[in-house]
Length: 327
Length: 304
Image (cartoon, rainbow over all chains, first blue to last red):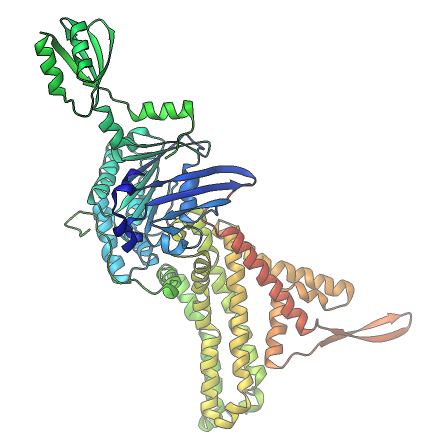
């Protein structure tokens, strides 16, 4: 991957764990009862927030479970921060936080007791676990309700409690499996804000699995789309957005033919698509101001300038139609 | 991630040693178990026979008390292998009822609430989970079985003298091993039942059934076929025989009957199954429990 090439080789040699990809898939396959669920997944993921997309049954949750060591790979393997999921499962799990999709909690416990227990199971001493449990519950917005029994929580509160237990021990990688499931719009917004805050803190990587494109688009910079257990598309949303900024749609008034030819003379590709409309792909050394300069020279008015916006939905739909794309 | 800061923060402090992490489970479980006043009261009642045992040992060595009682308690209730065996069996019964109250919800509750992925996504293995859940029972039951029995054995040794202690060291090992085998069996069975049945009441009923239904069936077999091999399916009888074996009081010939052939009567002696058969049967039960636990205690069950 491009990012790996940018890191000095000397630095990688000195501290390989530091520069290891967050997730490295090496031909990972998983089979249940003879039925392949994940098929030969390959690739390196290094983003701060990685979105895992796919229709229901694509294998998103199975991939997360396999990375957590819940299912054994039938062939291939994967590495998390350079550690093999099959041989170093315990070390890996000490670096991970997991928010499961389904309702998961321990009955007859207050939230603070529950989160504290989870922290202690992660290896925190009792006092530190209690302190961090309070902090985590305040952080997710359950501070006032932390002494209430989990049985009395609403669905939104249970989702937040699950997030609190996933972050209480300060993991380096957090798996969030459908974190906005069943949330009303304000609760969803709060959950997305929390995920973005954790991402922006720079202290943890996030893998967000969802079938809601908007959630992933709002939180993630790298996207992995699975289809029938295969890798359908990998895309770096940031780079995609940057490249989209070179693609312009212009609505003009004036001598369109001469204007288009002058843009061509700048080295840009162009296409006149109808009355008053021109599509332009900017070259690296050409800026938008050059387009305005040319328009001024030929006395052409630019009534509207818009960037092409290939939404995640477009990418997703293309992936579902076309199928396979590697990293 | 301080309360007032509201920012995500990594934990950089010291971690507890790996080996001690399973003990987190009993520590939190005890808080829940002793919330029930009824259970706390019952647990206190479990110590009454031990108190009686302590008093009997004391009376054996208190001349004044013996004079007041005007009975020779030394002859009436001698302190020997049978004395300790009786109390070990009695405490075993109490241990069974404690298991019935505490054991069934331990795993069942986690399975019902899908809590296993939360345990197993941490540096915490399935073995540690089972060990942690079992130690809730192992610790509680040890407190009412072999630990106080051992203390009372030492109390008797203290009052009787060093020679008694040396002569009866085998009793100490019988108390320890007998107690441990029993509570291990109870803990394994209750965990296996708890993993199979997600509802507490049904799990308790199933545990009760496992002990009593085969015993009744075994007794029916014994009577039908004039044998004692029916005891091999009765967990209570198996434990009784194993404990007797450990205390050195096991006798295979356990009864006899007269078989009439016309007018001619014939005395037939009934023999208990040999000790090795009882040990083997217990081993098979434990192995089945472990296999069940290994099958059921998983983060997610894959339906093939």
